[in-house]
Length: 151
Image (cartoon, rainbow, N blue to C red; front, side, top):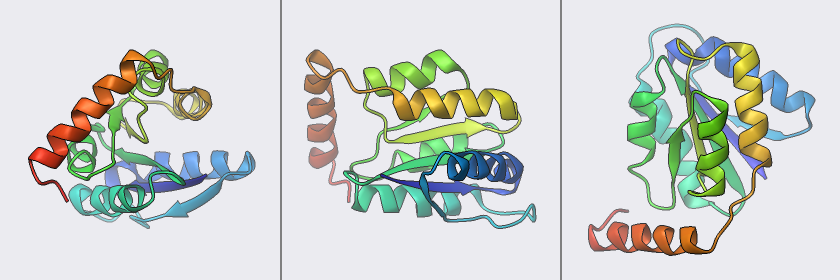
């Protein structure tokens, strides 16, 4: 599983911390930018990462960080095959995987400490989707996406 990372300037420091954490754990990581704390368009970088997950949802998951996590969550959910979840706490991280099979994790650097981010990432990556009635709901979402001609 490849982990696709992205941030804007407001999420850059936390993204770099998460990247080092993931690499220490042996994950394959692809960083889509931003590559500094210089002002950057959150929508652009969120879209870059979500596009990769959208094209290969079976082999990739995304972790996207901006100031609040909200903006990048919005843009990443515009892509087919992407189920992005804003998780600034451990419970949300667990449930986003268990019930929603989220494949993009969004966090806010201005909301989450480095220590908490590590816990959220570990929970998110190590929680399995329950399936069952939750799979039916995801199928419903897929039908909504198809009906509305998402690309």
